[in-house]
Length: 125
Ligand SMILES: [Zn+2]
Image (cartoon, rainbow, N blue to C red; front, top):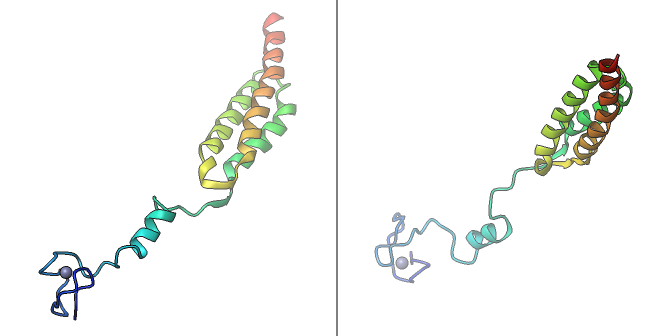
């Protein structure tokens, strides 16, 4: 058996070459080690197909257009929508379909407008 790094003859059962000191169990340079580091520097996590929290945030925001007109409850609901959407946005890099979370955040912010107006109306009376 020959060391594939330095070419000297080494015993079959030796993990480390006594001449060059390299680990004989590792694949040769330019093969698997390089390929792995070149294509995926960090171990890539498999992407989730759907950002469920983001979708929930968007649905909450759409329903929020109706709920926002209920004084106080509408405002609380809007903040809940924004929190759920924000969690969805934080998962953006881990899920394929994450556009919902951005839509939920924007719609949730828009819901705050009628919710705030309703609160002002109540407080004015
Ligand atoms: Zn060697």
